[in-house]
Image (tube, rainbow, N blue to C red; front, side, top):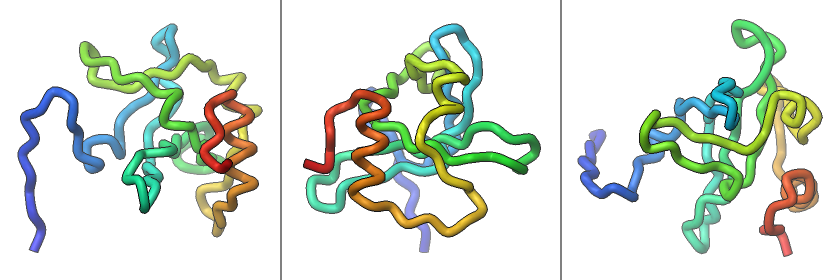
Length: 122
């Protein structure tokens, strides 16, 4: 049985609402869509958002893990914003959405280093 939760808090959001959210640059360029979120099992903190970026009609599309700290929620437009442009994402760590991928601490350190975010993996 599926449970529906109504959230009226201004600061809480359901993961079902996050997945599928659009992500924009500061110049209002749509960069992609959040495909997934990665949560630390022990602390319960959201660590990464996985951004679907590039390609056309799903072909050539890549998944780009973004440290959660790089995203800011735009309450006016109801989207997420990152201080990045397409060029920065093209060079970012990513993986093919259609291939098996195994996350490792070393890969996480690479992501954190690329975005100059606090290293979760220490």
